Length: 344
Image 1: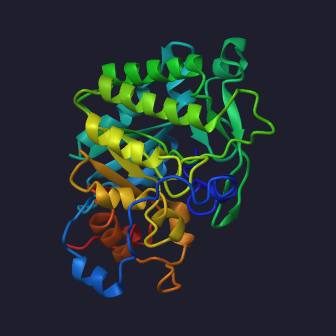
Image 2: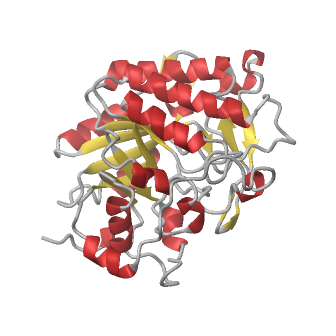
């Protein structure tokens, strides 16, 4: 399995949000780009814990060689829905059990990301979800474009269909019955998606998608009473700069329900992020139970708008901790610093 994500980090939602919504509704809270001087002075104000980020299938090859580092607190593993529910109501959590046993023996922690969307073929959703007429297709095709260029078409589970959402919530309940209190956290993937509406047959709408994601947030928090539950939020389809109040409502909902938030990318000062989720992370520092941000593979390809050079580890940490309020950072195992000796 591959964790590489052709993500909606910078340009993916431009096409679908700037048409018809520009200049409308409520803007995001102001967040001025951090200056190099301010960044330097802020370093050390907060130190998030470092975790590895990988797919469950890469645990042996990519995680085990690095997990012994003293500067690594644990790992976040991405697990596709299909790997957990191979047939309807037949759950297989053995891969999580093995990883958890291995990590606990080494005094390391485990986060699980339950993946219901895929940024390249194949779709790793349960077969029954895609074939049973009851679920009306079960998934929608997506376009994947970002600041690094167009990607392959992907798939997102049709959570806006109550039958599909019911099956996903059944999975969350089964996971909680097995692992609540034993995991460091459970998170749902990013909110950014771009359904190919010309090819969609599931009845997708932006409002229905937003409502479904909040419903899953609430349900996840309900069943995970002891383990922190987290929603990644970066962009909302159909919205730009909080034009439909989706972003504002997300943070208000999370804060009032004790739900953690995070995101798949730390990209300091990038304009698209600064007009969407980043100002709200800044505004809500100290108001959320947990903030977990990731530095995933594509992030190493972006260049800072200030230096015009690839981001450094220090820039990721400074911005993640002191602007976004990150308590934990999940690093792709390809991060260059992970392949150098740990500082003592």
